[in-house]
Image (cartoon, rainbow, N blue to C red; front, side, top):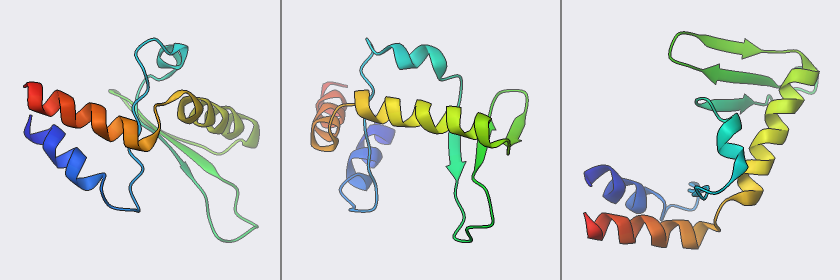
Length: 97
């Protein structure tokens, strides 16, 4: 419950975009752990996908593979609830606990 309150408070900051992916979304099957796409200001540097799992951490640099992770992230974002609705859902769940 404390974590949910913290998230709802943090989500009020303009630099935090908290989004909930509905349980019915098929994207869940493709998400097996935290993924971050690291982009760099220098155009000579390629993006890197950082994949964290229970047993290892991977830095994926192959552009085609990074693209797959970027597309997965875009799809998850597109299927997520809007920001305001996501925050409302978290607030409701926190109150119910």
